[in-house]
Image 1 (cartoon, rainbow, N blue to C red):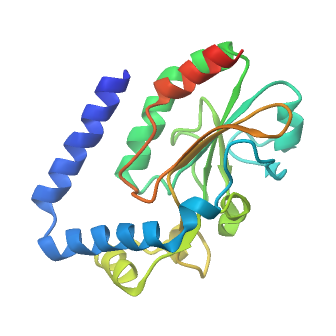
Image 2: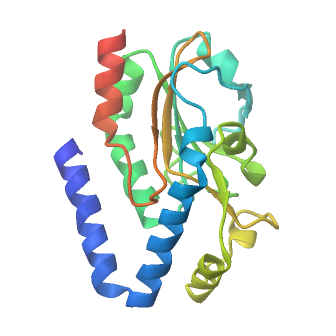
Length: 214
């Protein structure tokens, strides 16, 4: 999926949501995004040049490693997503699947990190590593986790989505959409983080960065 195709698909999804969702629901989502931007979370999260914490990697491949062990072999792309219940996340993961061979050919590894628990092997993780982030502990160490407000909780409940069930946690928390490239020296070489859950980084930009940094 090219940058243009990916961006066009996201734009199409935004139009569909605006047309299909009742105006009060759209207002709740827009207000939540505005509050996140004002909260300072984008300034407080990890940025380019900062060191990242280590974490254990477990998931669909049934192996256990750590981020630092992977970094001995080359850079690691870490893509935080909310869960497979999110249409934007599924679209993003499908797009990354299209460039996975290029990412690996450039000597990098790709990790998809989500609080969504019990993702089955046939759900987007048969070709790359999905890391189940219990209670958003990994995302919190990057500073990109936020708690949903009452209106957002009510809205998701109306959509028959319970984060406490999906994430198997008592906390109604989610990570911001975020993509990092961590260099072998354990420092961040590239960063994309946005307060708007509809905004996602075109995977081609990751490929271009890796291509010009190797």
